[in-house]
Image 1 (cartoon, rainbow, N blue to C red):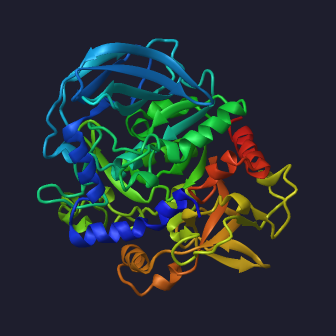
Image 2 (image 1 turned 90 degrees about the vertical axis):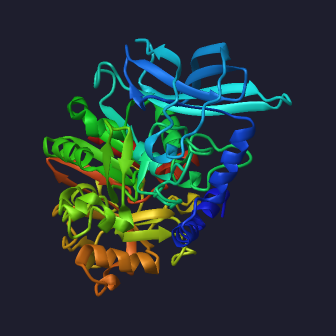
Length: 497
């Protein structure tokens, strides 16, 4: 078991501890204490831009001078802008920074030139402390295409809502509770990312960094895709919410890794895209599990989650926008209707109640076009040597027909959904009860979730929607596993046409 898996194994223990004692994580407090001594940290005023937009970078540092370097990160890292000798200034961190942002002034303004390709852009700030030890800070943003769909028919939207949900910089994230009024039901995008979400640094990092962030999944997928000759256009979760016209320029929209938090407009716009013939590929797991609300023009995100009865919308009986499970019976809109699968019918693999899972998918329908060119046979295991099934997995309710799994469709899974591969997965006991209570209003149905499956499959309803059913697909691309790579090519090639 590698470091990544060790982090994942401890996640639920961390969640239970944070919820039980009602405290911020000790890691977050330690990072804040370090920041008082010497630090350099930054955040942009937005997460996505296009040519002609001004990037306004807010910076707080104890250093007298610092440098800034911006690089596009894809198959290679290409520096596109830098400056040295910027005068530094330390700004106070508000007590409600995690919920309402830092409100630091703009330190640097950069206009996005037309020659910056759509992509992920890292911002690296460097200086030295009084003892001449290096200081480094990080931020990021995405550049959207100023001519969407012209150079690529594939749009990758980064799971930035999930980054924010786990980010405990400046206070509690959506997995912690702090002293009143800092409750973990709201998080701001207007603050730095805690250490470890954008790169995996040495030394201290946020306890939540292994479960979200750019370097865990999306970076690997993008490196493989660009090296393999695919040109992608990029966006962030909020672009699906705020810029629905963007979608009409593409044939295929991608979700990669851990894409857990979705707003109603995000989902509305993507479902309309599918109904109009657009295609989606979820190389991701735990997808669209929690409904959230973007507020303050997209600068903050609200999610009451387990405590949904505290949500003001619950008291108003505005259940359609309730910030809890999408599959909650009060909302009546299970994520299966979008993705074909749900975390409620999946769970965890290679940890928890399935600690020694094989780490691969059992093939059920090898004749499917998804497996063209792989020579996979019925019963073969795909990707087990690289553990492409692990951490969080999504599935659907199914029964057996002629020895093969077929959906029951009682959970909202579309009528045309085909299960083509699967692996055992299971929720924790406390989650079994919460899932039953949420979906059915009682705990009498928890046995329906006891034996879940990571489910690879797809359906067509206007457009075609494919799901890998797990967060860890990128592991196979990083290995590299030629079968995982061929399946990925099959999906990208067919659904982007």
